[in-house]
Image 1 (spheres, rainbow, N blue to C red):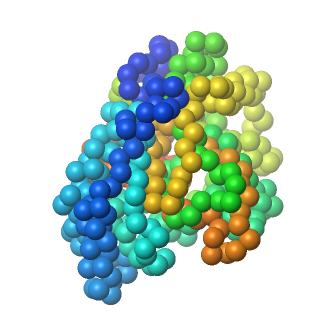
Image 2: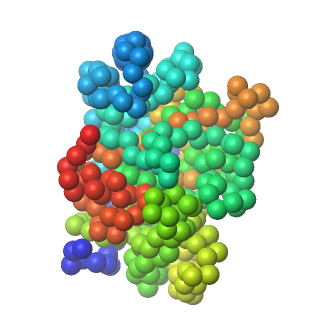
Length: 342
């Protein structure tokens, strides 16, 4: 913990942006693969598949991408030090079977960072698609398993990577918003609530912690060593289902409502319609993202399907102590402290 426990002034810089800064300017944040780079990725998939190894046993050296590595490094600079998001377009997902897509995505992920566990079963690659379940039908269903709207939140580790295999019949757009700009707006309108957001909240763990704990405690915003890191999920609300969890105070409710209001205001968030072959990446400390509800195709082979990784990145920001025992960031915190990327 540093002396600057609370941030009391607005932040400026590349991480503080609004939709107008990037809407209609895809050249600033989208990089399309050339045919040569797409072929490089295809060759890496073929070479690794021929080894017969499981993709999760892959080492970065097993998936050589001499040309694509330059694009990857550029994306990492945008994720930490830039706006906190970037996209690659033109990954040839439609030319591969499901196993080959996983090889390609995992291999790309290793060039971005280290894949972390996303659930209590320690799975490090998730399929984002409608399973027919609805959020709320039990204590473990998570929004990514449904077709419901997902309000603004962030995932775990330093960043998420979403590879679109197929889009929905209708809907399902992803929105990204600057967590810094949202904080600045809360601070401008209600400085008292900006302080509340930097105090502890109880979070529902959705049954995903290895120690079985139903809740964990941490702030929404944390100011640490010159970085503002954010954690925002709807699971603060569902934690209230547990009688042992303290009731939200009036100030906490007002702070949550103001945060939610600002993230949804016109001009705040950048909307992205992911097409097959699009790889969206975002910094989980610096951005929040949301997803619109969607209607899917009747044909199972055409249903919306994305692949997701949570990644710890080399040279990432210093992380606040509150992350050490959290479900979403604990592995990243430990890896950062001990310097282990394998």
